[in-house]
Image 1 (cartoon, protein in one colour):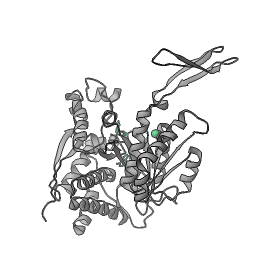
Image 2: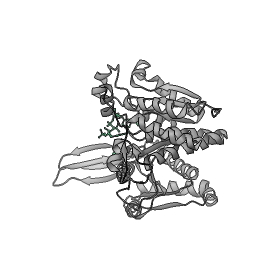
Image 3: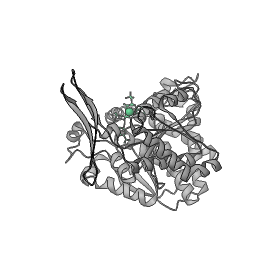
Image 4: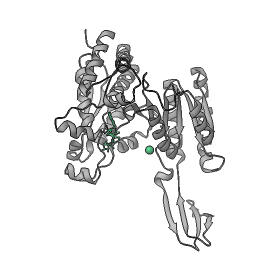
Length: 403
Ligand code: NAP
Ligand code: MG
């Protein structure tokens, strides 16, 4: 078979620990034999980030802006332990944070669904994709503990020096706490556009919810911005695509989500997204089956797995012990990126290859061949636990038949 050709390079961001090992295995076993892979390679492994004073992370984000599609391996976000372990010059910032800030994107997370792994909510037969607004609110707050007898006000000074003052609370009879939050229209507008674009891209309905009945200025502003952008820029496109934008109160959204069968995007404010994404991921079974894509309002895509570098497995691997780490979410980051590259460049054989590779992966698990994490969850009668590499080889057996 002749290898599938690519025209534009994919931005490849390598990473750390166990996922770095898996990264190479996926390329060697499942991609390089079939695709004449064209990538612009950036090594975001912690050692090289340190060597380049983190410049490589910035370069990889600019390359993503230039080419439009990236695939990223999980990376270590350094903490004090890592500074010692890797003898770092500095506690470098989270690469995902850096990339997200440059691309001004929104992260969409969706589970991969397979027979045998039943969600804790069994009616969820289709994926629920969560989009979390990643700017502001309680994540950029100013807060204080205040002593009894304090009067707390909120003060806004406009550019002409005019002050608007409102009382938050007079703390008579008890000490207390206060908090100041903000968000900016520009960021909310970007978030809305990312969400509407991704809904069109994946042909799914989109739900959005806030607490606008209680928060009549703050949350209501989110509701209004979404509505204005939808009416002005997306309504017609949604009608043509046969999909819907649905706004409701957050309480109602939660109730409807639980009763739903899935198959839509749920756009969440920052805090709601933080909390609900953990709930949804757990309910679908395994973090190792959760995909993640960062989409910018101008249509740039960066695909990755939602999980981290699986440090515990890596240390076992270093000791020469066999590991059974799940490679599915990382593999789907590759297929997502290859398919998107194929769509943008009009390479239907590349898109078809990505589809087949995903089907082969799902079929392998549904045939009862799986890594340890899924083995514990699967209700299939005949199932076999395999190691990291054996799983990829079993996928390859099925892929060969499909090609
Ligand atoms: P993690 O890598 O997601 O792993 C946590 C645990 O979840 C693992 O120990 C394992 O459980 C299970 N798990 C996760 N992915 C798995 C997979 N593919 N196959 C099988 N089991 C899997 O989180 P962490 O250990 O807290 O973080 C490790 C490093 O990853 C940190 O340095 C962190 O900064 C980084 N991180 C990076 C990203 C990213 O780049 N997007 C995201 C999160 C964390 P068992 O041990 O019970 O088997
Ligand atoms: Mg969370």
